[in-house]
Image 1 (tube, rainbow over the protein chains, first blue to last red):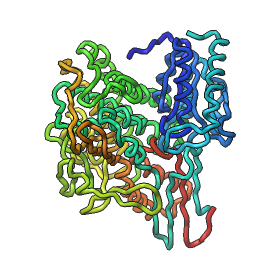
Image 2 (image 1 turned 180 degrees about the vertical axis):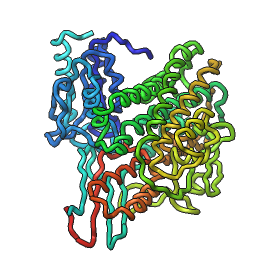
Image 3 (image 1 turned 135 degrees about the horizontal axis):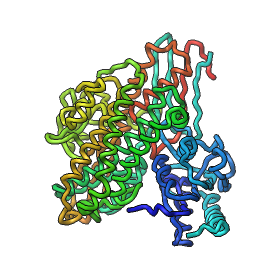
Image 4 (image 1 turned 30 degrees about the vertical axis):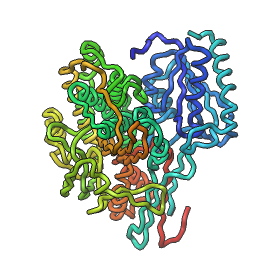
Length: 159
Length: 435
C-alpha cells in the first residue's frame, strides 16, 4: 500500500478495541471516515515508532486517543502538541512500551514533528479488558467528531 | 534511608502490574512479579467463532507482534484440518515474520533497553545526546514495518493473512521493486546495531538456564519445528501440555509456565541463539564472532546483543527470500474444516508462542488455549531478580530499582495486551519501615 506523500491533512485514531475506553480513538476515527470519506483517516494501536513514520507523510495531523489524567471521564482535552510538550500527567512512563506521548516527545527532539500536530485526548473512565465504552465516554464521541470536522473545515485543509 | 522504592507510572489500568522484593537478614526472602496478564479474555472470546476468523482476532492480542499471533493461529488451524502450506507461500510467511522480528527487536533494543545501559531514563533523553543512532534505528525499524505492510497488507494488524495463506500475493516485480534496496540498507544498519549494542557496558551476570525453543533441521526457527531444550527436551509441539504445566500463583492473576520435569525455563532470543546458532547465516555468525559473542551466551543482559544479531539474520533471510521469490500460483491453499484439535507453535520475537484449538466439523471453535512467551518466562525472571539482587543488596535503592527494571527488560516482556504500568516495591524487613 503506497502512502500518498502529498497529504496535507491526516487524522489518526489511536486505541485498543478490546480495552474498554481505550477504544475511543478508533471509534472516533471510524465515525470521521463515515462523515467525511475524502479525509485521510488511519487507525493505530499506538505503537510509537510506527506513528512517527506515519505522521511524517502529512503537514497537519490530528490525533485522537484516550487519556487517563484524573479528570472527569468524557472530558475532551485539546492540545497543540507542535508548540508545547504533553502534560507529564498524560505520559505513560511504562518501562515496556513506546506509546503516543513518547513518540511525540522523541519526534520533537529529533525535529520530526509534523508542522501542525493537534492531540484530542478523551478522558477514559475504565480500561478493563472488555469491549465497550463507558457511558460518559460514549457521549463524548459525537462531540469530538463534530469538533474535529469543524476544525478541519475552518482550517480549510479538508482534502 | 528509603526502604520502599515506588516508581509510579501513569496507570491506564488500575491495580495490575508490579514488582515486589522483600529482603530479610541480608537475603532476598521473596520476589513477586506481576507484569503480564495472559490473554484469557481472548481464549473465551474465540469460542464459537469460525476457525477462519483466527488471524484477524488473534492479531489484536498484541499490538507489537500481531504476526506471531496470526502465524501460530493459522498453523494450528491448518494442523487441525490436515493441511500443510509449502513452497512460495511458506517463504512469504517467513518473510512476513522477518519483518516483525526486525521491527519488534529494533524497537526493544534501541528504544526500550539501550537507555538502561547508557544511564538514560528513556529513549527521548538518549536521543538528545545520540540523535544519529536513534534516527538510524528508527529507519531500521521502519524497514521492518514496510515488510509487514507489504506482505501483510497493513501496518498494524495485517489484514492479508488467512488460514491457508493470503488474500493477495505480490508479483516478483512488486517484491523486488518495493523491498530489495531497503533490505540491503537494513542489513547494513543491522550490522551497525550489532556493533553498537556490543559496545554498551554490560553487568557481569550469568545463569544456568534451561533454554526452550523450536528447532528445525534446515533453518533458524520461525514457524515450524520440534520443541527442544538444552536439557533433553525434544518433543513434537502437540505434546506441549504433556510437558509444560501452568501453576497459578497466589500473588497475581497470572499463571507461571513450568516444565513438569524440571521447573522454570527460558524462551526467546537467548534460547533460540544457544540452541540454533549454526543455523544463523554465515554473515550473522561472522558478525557475532567479530563483536565477541560465541556460539553460546548465558548472560541475560547480552540479550540486547542477541536481538541485534537476530535482526541481522532477519535482514539476511529476507533478502534471500526476496531474491529467490516466485509468485505463488494461488494466494492460498484451500482449507476445509474438520472436527479435531490443532496445534501451532511459532517463534514470536519474545519466544515460543503456542496455540491449541479444538474445532467441530463446521470449523466452529470449541476451545482455545494460548501460551505466550512472556507468561512462560515469568518464573525465570523472578529467579533472575532473586539471584541478581542477592549480592547487590547494599546498592543504593534508586540504582537497584533501575537495575531490577533492566533485568526485567532483558526479557522484552510484552504487556501490550495487559497492564501499562509498573510499580516497584522493595521492602527491607529488618527495619520494618516502608515509604
